[in-house]
Amino acid sequence: MIIVQNLSKFFQQTAAVKNVSFEVEQGETLVLLGTSGSGKTTTLRMINRLIEPSSGEVFINGQNALALPAEVLRRSIGYVLQNNGLFPHYTVAENISIVPKLLGWEKNTIEARVRELLVELHLDPKDYSNRYPRELSGGQQQRVGLARALAANPPILLMDEPFGALDPVTRSSIRMEFLRLDELKRKTIVMVTHDIEEACALGDKICLMDGGSIKQIGTPAELLFNPEGDFSRDFFGSDRAVLEMKSLRITNIWPYLESAEPDLLKSSGQADKDETLWMVLQRLSAGGPQRLLVRKDNESKTISLEIIFRSLKQLKGILA
Ligand SMILES: Nc1ncnc2c1ncn2[C@@H]1O[C@H](COP(=O)(O)OP(=O)(O)OP(=O)(O)O)[C@@H](O)[C@H]1O
Image (cartoon, protein in one colour):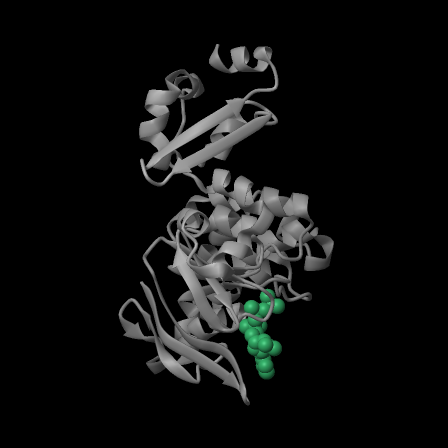
């Protein structure tokens, strides 16, 4: 769906992005992760040509993006900015309607779409449609920013630090909300963040960048368990243990779990193979187990789990 080939950007003498190449399949989320100044935003903005590349190519559905008029390209790509970029003098409904209006949609269709998006994003249309951005909390503004990007139902969504301006608690709850949105599940998404946990939670693939270049691309589990080089290894630092837990999908360890802890999984009754082990365990026991270790043995290719619950009562409660 998106192919980026040898993309580079020079600002005067400075190489902000150097020979970056990646592919994002339809419905996939690729996260651009890296330190400050590593070229993430520049890379993202070259996809919809808010920044014109110095060299390299971008293909969207097989079409050369650099050969299309930039406005046409941008109408098929939703864009969510870090500080939401809402127009302060437009109401919520007007902000969300911008692209559908540009595309000449009928008034009734636009109104219905605005209502639908507000409901989906948990903002009561009666209460919020006519508010101005300043009358919303940061999290609500961010939801409206997302609704605006989704309004014309673009197949591709680019998100630049979409949760960056939020406090950690709001950030993590909105992130969970976004993960569950059906509308987002169908999109091809490229997202910038410097938050490692966010990258692991949201990315099907992570593109780890440093100094304008890609250091490694892979699934969160690949980057965590098989880092290529010192930069990748050091990047996750002390967060590694928890992140490994969070990035492991039940599918990855299903065969081992079935033989090792059948009761545990059966007791959940609904352990979804796509969920991370962490989420399942959190659901199983409010507050999570006291200690949870995953060990991977590369030679025998086995994964062992050590789960220590807070009390016998907690364990019995789960298995009941
Ligand atoms: N318009 C510009 N003119 C000159 N240099 C720029 C411009 N935009 C970005 N740069 C430089 O390009 C490099 C990459 O910037 P970019 O914003 O892509 O990084 P980033 O990884 O998104 O950083 P952050 O996480 O801090 O937003 C930086 O060194 C930055 O100073």
